[in-house]
Image (cartoon, rainbow, N blue to C red):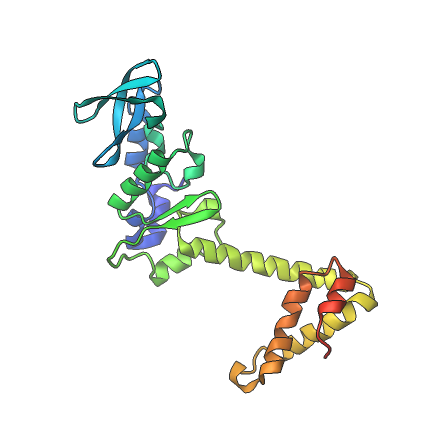
Length: 237
């Protein structure tokens, strides 16, 4: 996790991307009883935080933070996560991954204008309905070349990692082409050369059938492990 000093590279956007060190340290030391800390269903707010008083006969009695005591079915209470998981950047890391935990995490991050949150492979974005300084040139540079785990959640991280992956795959494809036998790769190589020759030509100047043929190597490269099928699905040059 980045320190406050390391987050300075993001400029004014830092406070909208990651919790400050002080808040993280306070969360680590906050008192928490995992045996009694639960979310309970609520007619007005959907879920509220509370303290479990007792379980009996398939029912659970919970005292909410507002001081109200309610008795509900055991299925209507959900375990809370320790405070160190508050405003967590990747919800897949939660000890208890349940609906109220996800909703509260997104709600608390949104309250701090942290609109980007990871959930495993996905990036969840909540529309702030206002302009935030998280898209300027300084932020773009700060995310460049960083792995996903090395930076706060952001669409820039997703796009930069996708770009780096594309470059890696391109290199692997070139190596793969050099090791394929002639009969299965000649046509793909010719099309790749054609695509390379055309890449700097404005698309509007290309006729439609050439645009279709130019995209064919991309489709064909996905089939390289099945040469016969690849040859069957490739348009002639």
